[in-house]
Image (tube, rainbow, N blue to C red; front, side, top):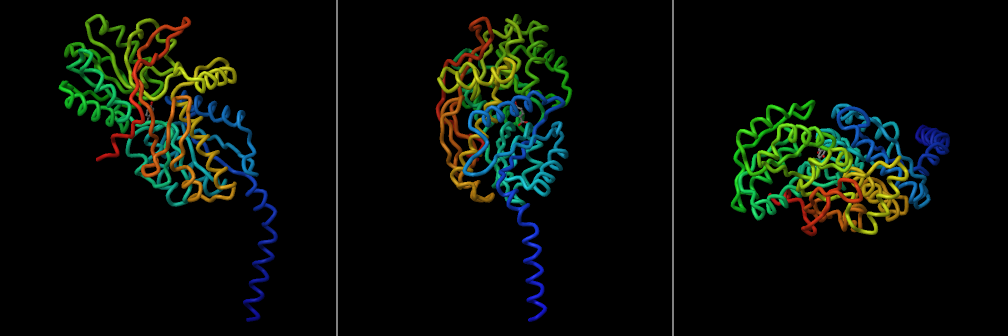
Length: 390
Ligand code: PHB
């Protein structure tokens, strides 16, 4: 009895000693934003970091009595590095939320850490369908490749495109794009005659494009991750594929707003399907694009930026809904079902799947005010990830 009392006393003393520190810490809400800031995917990191900072500048950093702190870490898009950083952020920094995830392998490598530590993981970029199934703590604000690809496979056969060759980066999102485009095109009476896959790292598109030229399909469907589109476009044009009567189509990753304006007139007329265009004609988007450019030396926001901006919104609203007192499970619950108008258009977080439901737009590259833009000409509303239905 004596001994137990003594122990309790010591424990109490220890608690009192750590209390000031613990209190200071609990006044802060930490977001661990892990992004590729260098390497092949660096533009994704730059866009998302800029968007997250813009969101904070516009909405303040005091939310429900908490000081929001953004901790940005560069994972160089190496999944082992993403995982190690996530672990450090959870254990040492005691972050309340993990976020970012520039590529699918990074998100998949981090999912188990989110689960074990019960930390919500807000995926702002990576877009393979299965990511939300890798952990019940994943919430996604980007898009999925099945979501974007199916719309284009509905559009193509109605527009004289029956025979298509697909060319995708050989990993999760590329394989999703290939599969869902191919199945839907076949359903609509078209045909994918050949499916080509290029490595994710340092791809050389030349031999693949030569093969496509020889196959002479009506169109070439391409998925490459954000940042790689300009290289495909350049080589497609250099090889005179367009003049040989082969149309270039793809998900909007290929006519990425981060690079589109530098692609030249050869990009005019390219049709893609995606969830975001900087030219989306809404008041919310005009305001977003203007503010983003102003804060970032005239840089145009791309779909990655929007994933980051909306991800911050989802986190902020969860802090508010839990009155700044929520642990991982409460925050997660407050993220599920959020519905709002994004710069991309209306969107919500499906409470069952934790994935984004949003409009998918068909767009064509056109010149507007002297610059190249993806101009939306059709919309499929409230598209759920078709990858979840199976
Ligand atoms: C991904 O790795 O999931 C990814 C990366 C860039 C994109 C799309 C998907 O543009």
